[in-house]
Each structure stands twice: as structure tokens, then as C-alpha cells.
Image 1 (cartoon, rainbow, N blue to C red):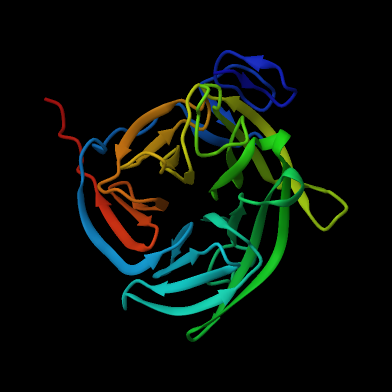
Image 2 (image 1 turned 90 degrees about the vertical axis):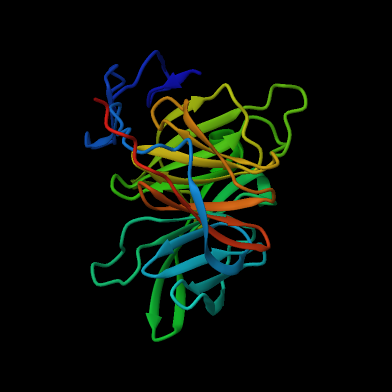
Length: 303
């Protein structure tokens, strides 16, 4: 799977912002983004499952501060109280098909919630992927979503129908798209994944009210994941493939795009999103079904 530096030169290994082959990846300012040495203390080959929230999941979601922010495909986001297991409010927003959602950094230090990034990757006009960035404020049980930024990429930049995953610590966005237009199938064996990284600290004004983050790198993978969703956790990108029955969760190296481990989902149905609460606990939502907690054991210490 080819890896490229900022100038588009193909590299044979991990690289820094200047294209030097190393064991650590950096952002545009030279800060460490991910290390090649990843923690392997959790056994992701097995898990137990419990119901986390019974409110139906529709599309992508993110979790913060005791709430699930669950997107739908009709320009809305439903806020769910985890403690009460009930809907608090449904807010109208401009996202279209909100296929994935991730929290990034805080816009203001006093904000209760970080900025929420929502991918619109299905039916987007003019062969573009859009990312809508919202500031969320709350007064009691009333939530207000303010659109503060719209990000845009062409399919030629990110691949078709790309979903995003945010690494808030480094402020880097990862986009996973398809090399061919059909996100649901790989009938001829040529549709593979395109992984790109973008620095959210540096934006280019497109002149139409949208912005594009600074390009960092691109990886063309040698595998296909049907109908995916994404998150970042523990120096990995976590992508779900939902075309299989049951589907799988794939942990992907952000540096090379290689799959590091696979977690089979526990039931059939369309998995819509994932959110890690800790290294041992992940929440997976299924379409028109609830949210389930996957608990993974720690590996036994070697003697």
C-alpha cells in the first residue's frame, strides 16, 4: 500500500513532515501525532456485550458529557441522556446524511462541549465531501447547535464518499474514502480504501464559504471495507464495515493504513458508529436498534 509525503513522493515507511523515514509520524508543526510503538495490553479478540442505551440509533454518533449526539439522514441530531436512557431533544442542523460524527477541540475554554464534526458523504453535490463543524451550547435541557465552519474536499482528494475521524490531541482529521464510486460493493476487485490525513490548524479558504484543511499525507490501502464508519482511539483509526453480516470493526494504523486487528460485531444489522469510552469499553450503535457496550479483557501478563 503506497504511502506519500506532503509533496506526493512515495515512501517506503513511516515519515515525518519533511518526508524522512522514521518510526514516528508528526503533524505540520513537528509535534508527534502517532508512534509506531502501540500499546497492546487489551485483548480485542473477545468481549462481552451489554445494552448501553435502548434509544434507536440512526446514523453516526459521538459521546461526550453523559450524552449521545446521534445524527440522522434528515438534517437532524438527537441528544440522548445516557443516565436516563431517553431522548432529551432533537435539533435541526444542516448535515444531510450524517454518516459519522467526532468531537474535536474546544472552540472556547469555557465551552461545555468540544466542536462536533459531522460527515456528509452520501448524495453530496458536485462530487464533494463535506464536513459540518458545530459549536454546542446547553441551557438546562435545551441544546443549541451553531454552524461555525464547513469543510469541503473533492472526491479526487479524499476518495468517494469519505467518512472522517478526528484526533483531537493533534487536531488532525483522517478521511477514509473509496477509490471507486460504489461504497457498497467491490464487484470487480478494484475498489479499495483511500486514507488521507489533514491538519485542521491550517485551512484554505475556497471562496464559497467553505474551507479545506492542509493536506498531510495519503495512503492507498489494499483492502475494501463496505459502508464504513470511523473514530480514533489509542493511536489507531477505528473503522467499521457494515456490508458484511454480521459486520466487523477494523483497527487501522494511521501511518500505513494497515489493519492491525479485527473485531467481529455480535449481531447482524447495520452498525452505524462506534465510540470508545476507554481502552476496554466501546459503544456500537445499530440502525433502528439501540447502542451496545463491548467490554474487552486485559491480556494476561506473560511469565
